[in-house]
Length: 126
Image (cartoon, rainbow, N blue to C red; front, side):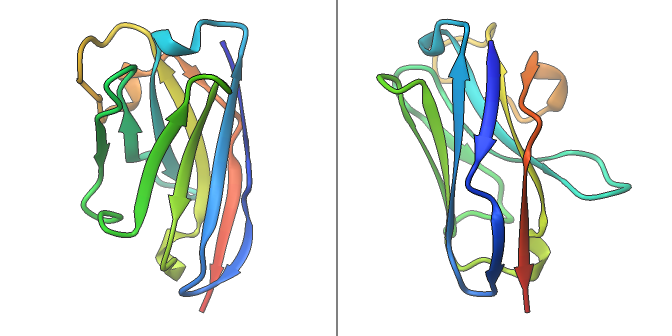
């Protein structure tokens, strides 16, 4: 499956952005979808994810209450709605797909995801 993120950009602190990740070349409903972020010199950090069909979500404590994840299986797209953005949210945001988790499991580790998009840059100014 190929993944392409969009929707990044420059925003002031307190603002909002919605990232999209479009999938192609696979059966979208077969994948758990995750969002990660990365800054130079640091490990990729789990932001959140959403299960295949029941749409259970799991978001990290650092973004809980500000970020929400959703998916539209008809459009083969997963979204990351980011509200009340902070300068520390500045990063490259990547979406990822996992084909082997079952049920409502939403893995948090990078090694659990086989497919990755190139990412989209989000910069939050203070």
